[in-house]
Image 1 (spheres, rainbow, N blue to C red):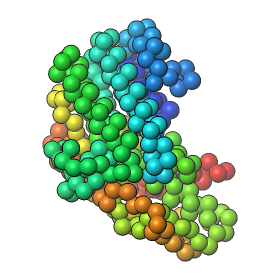
Image 2 (cartoon, rainbow, N blue to C red; image 1 turned 180 degrees about the vertical axis):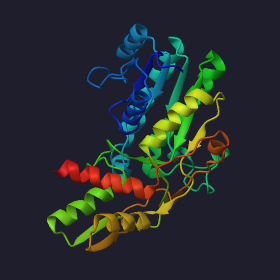
Image 3 (cartoon, rainbow, N blue to C red; image 1 turned 90 degrees about the horizontal axis):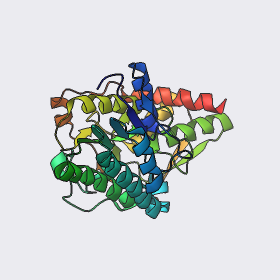
Length: 309
């Protein structure tokens, strides 16, 4: 890749896409293209083909997706499956058709089986059933990876697939209907402090364990593996360490200064019991995340407090 190459960032307004866009600009790339959803609906094959035909990007970062936390996934499973399949099918197919030099597909650690051995190695894929609370999203992401694999095999499309752990960072949702767990906790505890609320109720038992990756580290991984990875097998991306949801809540409580009571609604689902990635392959290829969880939580609290102001 060089700074003159035309790079299409699909989903540039999202959590990962916006981080990729910031990183590309900071490194002097000057031919970046992107469209908002109002300008280009990637679920529409006619619109998407017209875009690829006109622009003919050399590189594509497929960060566009319908995303959300456990509540959104449980409420809209059909939407999560349909929209993500349509976006992926169109972008991957048209990248092949219009000569894209290399595509980066972003998956998710939720593609692994619910009861997967831990930490989760790439070869554990498809060794058991999905977690029911995010099955629609997981099926779509698995299909996207397989589509990249088969387009490379049949048509020679050069594609790298990255499977990150839970991503958070600037431009994340703080809407509780859409948010992921870390941003939801930040909102709940900051709001509780500001309103004087003395009790906060959180979903589940708090025993589930999750691994968190900052969006800026994910953006660095995208560029790194676009430039260095030349096989069709996917790569886990993450720090390789996890925390329980109860431990995460404790961190946010300490960093926000909340002094009230926390209650756990055990009638609500925990989701997958544990999602910790084995990142040996990532490290063997020379990549390592840089932003620690405590640093990231501090940043998220500051971002949300600024939004409130």
